[in-house]
Length: 537
Image 1 (cartoon, one colour):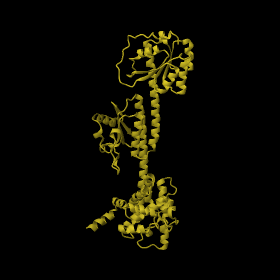
Image 2 (tube, rainbow, N blue to C red):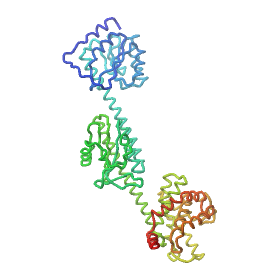
Image 3 (tube, rainbow, N blue to C red):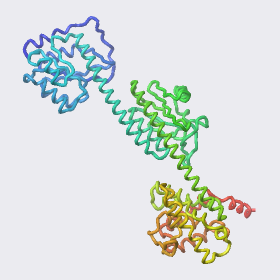
Image 4 (cartoon, one colour):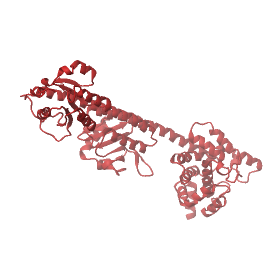
């Protein structure tokens, strides 16, 4: 840099049309000023001391050499702009800074303006085409007004690049979160997942909660889904300042200014933004509304709104897919229970047996440390343990006396009939039902049928079903016997531990016997209730 560079830079003039904006306490834009002449830094500070862009002031950080500039660029990767001199330690110091920032630091966001008082040493056309800079200025060009224009142009470019990158991350988040949401297996998981993904997507500062309008309440008392117009608007899941409000009426928690916006969202199906709050509505083909209320939302641009609408559509698809899947699974479960009930009716057994076996199987599976998934599948498959009896004649199935050896051979075939009925199915529940049907009469000591399997060679699902089936059957009245008292049933089960039944499963059942008895009370047969009432009289 020659001695005239500073004088050239002094051509800054006050623009009579400039008006200083009022100072605001917002995060400043970082601007790196790199020049080996201290007067350049002083004049830059002076010219830009009142500058504001979108209400934010500048934070000017100074470096007096290429080495210092590289250190500064590394420490302030979020800098928006760099005013860079070409000639400092040597003729090409400034160019080495550009290469470091762009190639080593991989910083493509910062706007770099090259300033020179010696244009001959760094020809504009060559520099513009050979280096990734955003502008090239001779210091004699930079009046106060032109510097003002340059700053606005560069900061606007930096802002837009940041917005594009944020939107890209938002789109990536939507894609990733959609994949996560599509994998959820329950409404509670999906609702919680929606809240978590929105929290990430919008970078919320406060808390929020979601609700669905109306519904069935699960055994834990948490509202899962409520049909529009049926009951109160209840909280399904919540975070932040609303944490712990699950199950409560939403209107008790919402601030009064949100009520009208909520109603408008319900009427129009369109999300509502006001102040730092947002109410979104996720709708799908099942006519159910899922509402999310957010507070502490950062200021959003138009594209943010677009992201939320895109996310909302994906969420709607997720809810619809979950609804359809649950409907299919519910249909399967109902068919299983109806089929099991039909077998009971044919064999003149009590009406609640299959439901009790289902609930007891799940309980014993959990006590045996099976996973939630395996325990649930077992619950839905175990009612099919005797489905093969549909192939057994009534004369044998409902015979009140003892079966002849020939009749017993026919009766034992129900295990194979049930297995053959489901062995080709692609459905996990049906395949397991076939396996249970085949093996639930095998015994721990190998004396059972049809294959004489023993010990852990018998499928765990069949061992569990066998135990709870016998436990419930002994406590129930049958065409060939009266109901046994609990004490006699317990004695019989303990006697058969290690012979008929898996001893570990027997031990687990006995340790939690009251829970199995409770299941019988929750799914009691009507005939049993009537008999109890009669005996009480």
